[in-house]
Length: 501
Image (cartoon, rainbow, N blue to C red):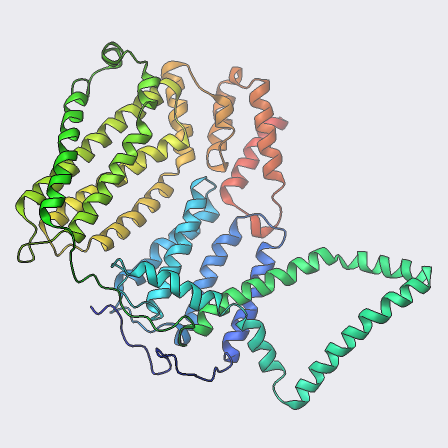
């Protein structure tokens, strides 16, 4: 597939002066409706159902104005169109669950939507699975969002006041406002009763809320208008071309020597690790002189960093090292495989360390995410291993698919509820639990925490009760249908029953 498919004739790639046309009324009306709904959803509201509605509304807006935005069909970019499915799933979970992972879901949704726009609007000069696409991401943001930000206000005014008579009316209104700003303060200062009445009138208007509503409306309407209004226009930062790397500057011998030096150290490290790799906690203590928790903490972050560094080094070496007749030398393939094998050793060691830490101190959301991230690294390393022996593998596409599946799987598992369940099972086996931590989790886990202290009332001491009361107070502050969340609603009901009966 070509990295760029020609857009319709209305798309100008040169810098010749083109008279800009006002955005069509259909686009401006859709943006105004979007702005009104956005303001109603988020003005003085917490996050909940409003986030789900927002992301679905963005897709609806894009479909409504697709002729102004989309230049690539489903057949041309099947995978990017299919990415809409996990985005919609993640959007729905923002309403059905309440978890720390929701913040990550929002970032993933926004990023995927943005990539879809850049590619499907024809703004990208590079294929989205090529390195040059990062340049497209930056420039598309500048040209389609930043420079088009004021289009809604400007084009709306142009449509409403088009013509001499309307322009004259607009000038009259502006002059009248300026005169009022001069006369009204003078009249107010001349009469105390008028001043008092005006003050009461202003208080009744709740100007703070008015300013908030106006700001949210203009912000949301402008942001949604900008990419649609500028999608088929010439770029303000100048013409761009696809970015291709035609030469591989690094000699194979240089890459081979550098990676061989690293491989020797890694092999020695792996040999040491296997001395106690599958040993019980008692052996770890005798060999290292460390407790389970100290062993788990020591070096975990460093090992994760080395794994990611190896991963990046392999990708860079495969992309920039010179080849023989378009083939990677066998000795380099062997080194790549060795580094990936060492990554598996590091991941296994890190997994062992985290298990020891959980056995000593219990489960937490952060520890769960560490485990899940290690699983993602395993999948990415397997993909890289396949890529070493097959040039047909579209590694960036597979990485993108793996990352989206990973996010959806983590959300489906529901980290906070999983952690609560594991801690409760650990209590049944060991008699140890941090009940206060259970009540610090979000709505997904609070129901299980309530059931636990009902079954074990001796664990519901003053500290835990205070934490439960704090969580209930926080949940009760979330008012309004736009902030509604199913998990929070269930948790609030259980907390009220626990604390008020």
